[in-house]
Length: 309
Image 1 (tube, rainbow, N blue to C red):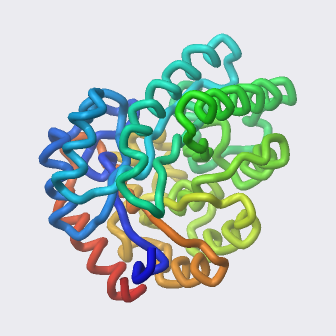
Image 2: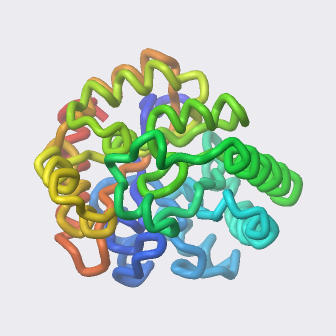
């Protein structure tokens, strides 16, 4: 839209403690109120069932607050062929709900955010953030995963007219930079580039690693999550062998500007590369953790300081 800044900022239920697989935080209506009050223009859907599953009720919830629905996360055990059918059904159901809100903003249609379901495999759950090559998939596993992605993306497009993007994720089978490269080589699927998951999955602590990843993967980047990483927590998690849930519970993902990543540089790079539209801020916290509204506000103030938007 004319007059819009190149980057617009949303947030998501995970910043308020509703996080896939780990439980539910505060009620959705309060979450959306606080998201709006802290200066964000859009929200993701969160786990299916957290927000209303009736399209008219969901539409009204967004309309009355002037918010845009940005996307919906669906985790599927993509390496398990028998899970592809149920995963497709879940993704299509989520996409059909979001399609009812696809006209809220002329510059943005909701995205089906697909991921390999995290924290199911004990080794990947225990060793998130420090995965070794020998803990990855064999070729058959990669082919099964790619098959599931293609099947689900095709079904979502046919049923709801929405695009599917892939979210690499800690404690899943697509976490490390090498695994992300293999994924795009096999599927060519557009990515959600999540800065915090990328840095943790890389095994590094330096924010420059995020920019290196963006430079390499930018041809595939369709959507972006701004998530910061506390290098002290990450270093301790790796040193003491924490599992993924414990690391998140100890504050692995902090408020923007308080961790390793320079989001002013990341934002400038994205704009220079032609990225336009929404970026979703996420501070993954477990139910009851932290101060979600205050943290969201501080992250938003920081973004205004470093981007001007």
